[in-house]
Length: 323
Image (cartoon, rainbow, N blue to C red; front, side, top):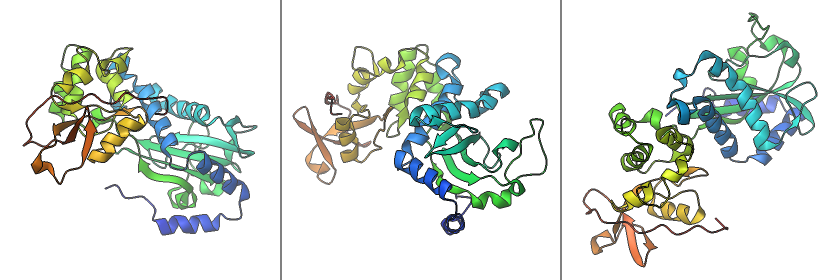
């Protein structure tokens, strides 16, 4: 398990030392109000990384496969996409205006390597980091003081925060879970078995066949399908994933509340917005008495294990407007 760089006690101490900065706390409170769990923020980072990878066109799923210019552009995209998601006002001197305060947004793919321009000194910065390999991200606020920055300047006259002063960052979320890039974390032979298939539909079917009980985001499906209508590869129709795999006993619920309830009851990962999860079910029998069950198609179903025979799964409930 990844350990945070700073302990909770250290961050509490940092917060106490910053209590005299009302603008910092006002921005902090506004961001927490907009996104109490950090899920919206995390999804922006996930979508931005997927936007850069552009798997539909390139088939890429690794950050290291990006060109240097694409990596450099990541900070600009994070800044733009956060503003779109949260409707931040334009700043006067900095990127955003949050709670009436100018805030600059700085993203780094390497923790601690935020590049701070000289004009940001004295202003609040929203410092953002995400790592696709560890599926972690952080975002915090810091009032930039010149003495807290490195002395060495790069060619753009930008500085970075000295390591010993990172404890002064007021974290909104620290080493939180980034929605997983499933393709990146699959065993190589499993990944090759999926990606080597000739058609996008076959690749999507194989993805949900081989990768069960794990959340699979749209970016992964997009990369595997390499088609503009990639989500259509999952829907109930001849040859498509839900129809083909239902005959093999697999359900593929999405983020609709009726689908989430099924996953939650059976104890598998619950799909969030834009995600799907596949798992095999079996008809409930007397020896399944200790297993949670759901009612679908007029019958009781449980999460299948290796000892349960393969049988066609029921149809998922149709989602409603309330979903």
